[in-house]
Image: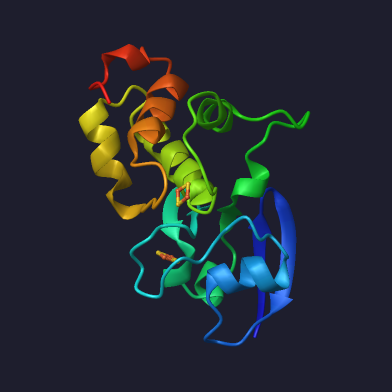
Length: 160
Ligand code: FES
Ligand code: FES
C-alpha cells in the first residue's frame, strides 16, 4: 500500500506491506538509521520517535498507521545550522552515552518529556525513561543530561 508521511518536516511517501513496521519503514525505506531496534517485545525504546508530537515506539506501530502523520526522528533534532539541540548537547557534555545505541531513543523520549514537563525532577525523569533501556551508562549521566537540558542544576541529583 502507498503511504505518505511527513518525516522531519519533509513529505515522503512509500510503498509498504501492511505488516511493515514504522521502524522498518524509517530505516529500510528512508535510510534514517538513527532509529534503532534493540528488541522484539517493545521494551527497549531504542526505536522511539515522535508521531504527531508524542513519543512512540516505532517498532510497535505499523507504517500504515502513520499514514498522514507528522513523524520526527533523531536525524531531525539538530538545529537548522547543524549544531546540536540542547538535549543532544547535554548528552555529550554529561557523558550520557557510551555505545550510542539507545541514545536516539533516549533523546527523543527526553524531548517528549521536556515538552510535557519543562523542569522535571530526578524521580520524574527516571520514571519517564522506564521505557528506554540502556546497557552501558547505568542511567545516572542520562538523568544528569536531561536535568541540564532543562536548565536545572545537575548537582541537585543523588551522588553517584
Ligand atoms: S525496538 Fe522498539 S522497544 Fe525495542
Ligand atoms: S549507551 Fe549503550 S545502550 Fe545506552
